[in-house]
View (cartoon, one colour):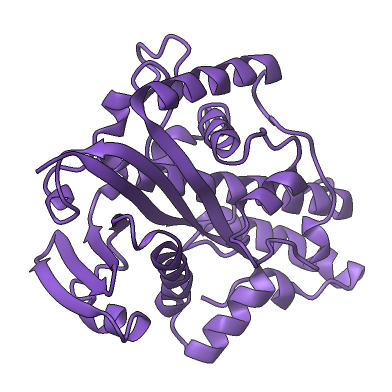
Length: 332
């Protein structure tokens, strides 16, 4: 088979399980100009973009030598590293997609928002702004972004988009209350990204990798609802991978749901990183706001026992400040 272009996309989320802060669902899409297989074969042998872009990026800090880290966001954002390892990849790839490195939190939220949507919030704890980069040297980041641009050009790979839905607590709670299922809420935004990819790139062809959704194995019915006019075939369904092919006129798309997708598919890693970075910056706004309300209360990441600690410390203060805790806490 002759080499042909392939749009290679990935979708992933961050903030599925916390008590506080937004759910974020990211999407990244890249065009690989010369891919020697079809979309269905990409399931078994996806483009190795870490190798193609190896002059500019790598997976781990060991031996990085100034290269930008691209990996599962859970491996890049840790308690000790903060945003230092996560931030350069998001901003550099965002610059590759849009032509400029976002210079502030509000610019980033606007740049990541899917076309026709907004990541703005009326909740006061997400008001305000901060300059970017937050935890990296701006000059070093610009150099890294330039090296990435050169590597992309040399490999004939183009960043088509880096997006993330930021679903703040008020919207999230309303959707969970309506559906009584937070997995359905998350998949609503995964589905939105899929539909936009299909509409924009379905003629290219298109291969989309997505991390397994809540342990689900079967996705045929969900995809049939999203694309009712498309012919849909099941390529495989097992405990680790579920793959499907859709065709409608000139459009065709292969969709793979698989565990550990962030480790195999660079677009999924980028989607994970953009979602995590947007959430972490949102939590910085959240904590900055409540530090003014209660300077003695330690900030929270929003998860587990730490979230319970923050709630217990904050409830008396919130009552005095006339802030309704129900507006803060996610209901599921």
